Length: 446
Image (cartoon, rainbow, N blue to C red; front, side, top):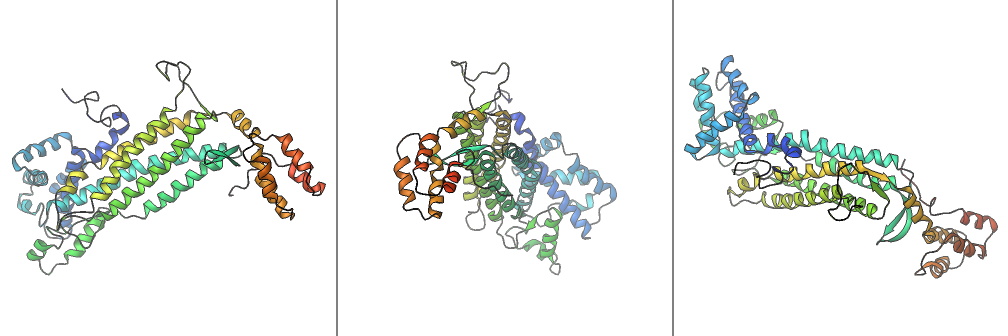
């Protein structure tokens, strides 16, 4: 069966292909080959810049073209070479040697991959692709989602809301503030994420520039490696084995998992508010909520987001736990799992779009919110007993507990009757009567 969106094994490349296709530039086999070519070419040009070799303008232009115009046909040519070499990075090396020979650079063909091991290429190519995917795909999508939340938080800033702790009615809050809880949590994690450097490994077969030093013992290869990775927008790890240690990447993966958990928490809260009829969802002509129950409008966007965030977390967890562990100077397990690094990001982007779609459908049902407040006057008992404490009234907590705890709904009339019997001044009674579930919402940050 030919590969298509209908025959793909993964929903990422099937059902959700339109939402994830942009990630192919970074994480597909084509993307990995393209970034390997990018690193090999930049390395060769860096050797030219440091005067180890002298490339003509024509040769430099042809190398730049390899990066800027890299095509599926080029990737296929490299895969054809790999059938002979049985080594993916060596195939890239031979491909570039052919480019040099065809464009006046035949004198310098043996400087392609000079002194390097394949992991110098992979552990630069993958961090570079990861960095650019984060910058161009992940962070913009996350910031857009946070902005959308912010707009809703501002719109609903003053809407009073019955809080629920342990699922039970609690001191009222405000809807906008509850959304700001998630916004602040996301912002804190984004700021933390931005402190983690994008790092790579570049130092030869076992990280010591052995071959480079043997060929040019007086040259400062450490500085060369540092400068080269810096030119690629990466930070070079100073002490490595054959591979990078992946600790920085693991920190980023864990950070993304925390962000996902915040969003799962958001999905569940919004889902619950919908089930409580605090929100209704805009309907679309032709859409069906249930195959059997015509009335239903299911909160599927939040459920879809939660499911995809959970899938992402499972893979992020394995990647962050596995990648920093390698036997002695290296084993191949990092390469095997690293090929899946785009999978959790794909699930995350699907979740972001589902969340945005779901948030865009929400219609505030303030009548249900206000009705819930009106049926839970007992929640202002906290305020009453605290003011009575201020007035040195004896055992106010116990008096309110006796009135409200386990007694079912307490209405305004019952509460005001209690206030009328209190042995306090009329001024204090007036203050207590002014408190309602609608206005007992505390303070908001400026």
